[in-house]
Image (cartoon, helix red, strand yellow):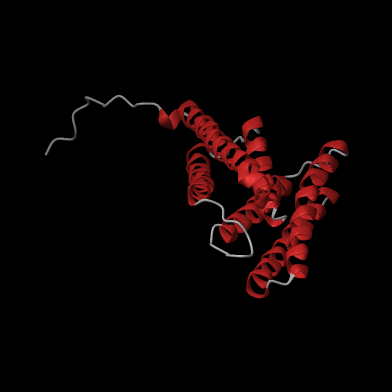
Length: 204
């Protein structure tokens, strides 16, 4: 249990707090709950960078960390995006369903693809790409912008920029990960075509 993994666990613990405070704000309209939800989301997002820095700086890479870190990202962002995909008149702006579909669809495809690659190849190599990091940044910008209620500023123009950026980079990152997975499958011997044997079977 490295320091980086402990920080990641703190991020995971913050997710239920964020969800509960969001629901309380939607129900009551009490600004304290909105600020608590915003604070928990921002702290979890900042700790995402902190645990990565600690892991690199102090060479604390671990198998557990490679599972927990992306899991914490997905749980935080997906829970926020799903909650904000519903209409909350007078409380929050709404994330369009097309973006929610792109994000959840990509994550489902990647999850299924990872299971297929691991079952066929035996292990899977995930190569981080800039598009994936940018997709996460834009998704966090979208959520933070709505939590701050800044979507009411500039007639929502800036939010549209973040939404389009999140959609494009999420789609591109998904395509690149699928491309990497198909290459790993194609390089494995089990993916090679086998020539049909012409040897006759045993006599009847």
